[in-house]
Length: 178
Image (tube, rainbow, N blue to C red):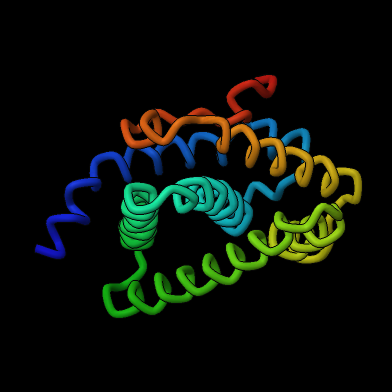
C-alpha cells in the first residue's frame, strides 16, 4: 500500500524533473552567469532548481509532499542511471548516489534558510560556495541570487493543480538563447 502512493505520482515526478533539468541546463546560465559547465556545475544547478520546486510543492501538503517526493525520487533515479552510463561500477553507484543525496540535502537546507532571509548576503554566500566552489565572479553571484529569488516567486504563483498535472514554468525559459 505504501508503495502505491509513491508510484501514483511517479510519472508527474519524472515530468517535473525533466522541466527542472531543462531549466538548469539553459545555456544562458553558463554563458552569461558564468556557472561552470562541468559535472559539478550542472549537478549544483539541477539541485538548486529541484530544491526550489520541492520548496514550492512542500508548501501545500499532502499532495505537494507526495509530488515533492516523486520529484526527488525521479532526480535520484536519474543520477543512478547516469552514473551507470558513465561507467561507474555497480558496487560504487550506491555510495556515489548517497554522497549526491547528502550534498543535495545539505544545499537544500542552506538554500531554504537563505531564502527565508530578506538580506541577499546568505543566499549569495551559499551560491558562491556551492555553484562556484568559493571562487565566483562577484557580479554573477548577485545575478544568480536575484534569478533564484525571482524563480521562487514565479513558482509560488503557479497553482498546485498545474504542478500536479506536470506543468511547471521556470523563468530560465525566457532567458535569451544564442
